[in-house]
Length: 377
Image 1 (spheres, helix red, strand yellow):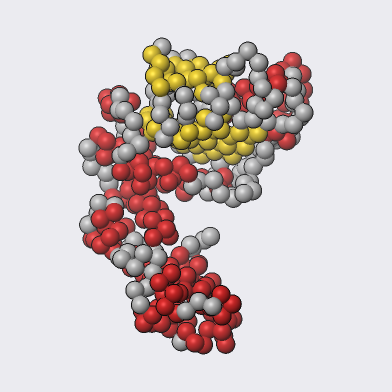
Image 2 (cartoon, rainbow, N blue to C red):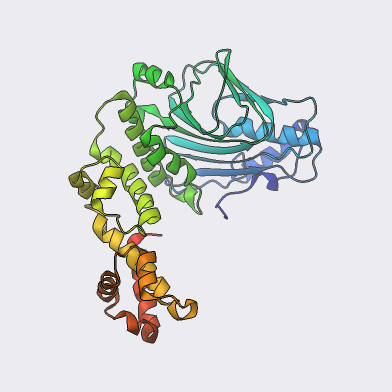
């Protein structure tokens, strides 16, 4: 996947004592510290990618990573090698996005230890998903504890702490300005004291999908929308954890996004309907209709459109793949061929037997369906 950002490793390695002149040149050229051009678009964010450059010695590879890490992670952090020698295979990677009131970072770390100083003035609420963390140790205020792979927890940066990350460490973290969530100091202390949240239903339905799906082309030009979704996700989670009411408008972006992803993955289930979706997300049918009332496709219409899109794609291949109408209907989520025929007729104006005689019309109908399902894509 190609993302709109400069890869950090595109810059040649310079020892610390030689960096002054080149950094001055970058500033003179109107370029941010990490090499990204400044943007006048208020919806633009700062996206940075990292991988270790080729041709460096083991010591240089670690130093290069240490410098980038210290600038990308908002908490002042010092990295140290966790072994006397840094292997030539030392190959961490990362991607970092910063926007209005939030930041995201995903890291595939090579073995290292990190230490941070207390930061009592932090206004962020930080949630980390330790996707792969074999043998990870995390310490707050000098108390180390193991972290299980798949754990999700809030991180307390007001206290000093450290981590010891082994080979294979993979983590994602979201930082949100907690004032936008109306999280008081007392509420913050309650959240920071919670254990692993991985099994919480909102974490599985909203938080992890949001953390795993933000990397796409042009994301740095859509940061206002990303900020809205992240605030919605975090507001929904915090409201559930603290048992406080969350305004429907605050939940709408997160719920709408999560439900759409669920429908995209489940439309081929013939039992999928509004009732099943409501039960999956613990919502009333009325609430579901409310969350989709301003969408081009209402909930039931969206399910039908997804099934019809798949049916049309398969019908165009029916002769080549020698698949029957009954097989196409089943693969698309229709309970029978008659239901598929009606949907195809509704969206194209043609019977299924006419599809191959008017492929131009069918491709036009498919394009309209795709635009309706993903407006603005």
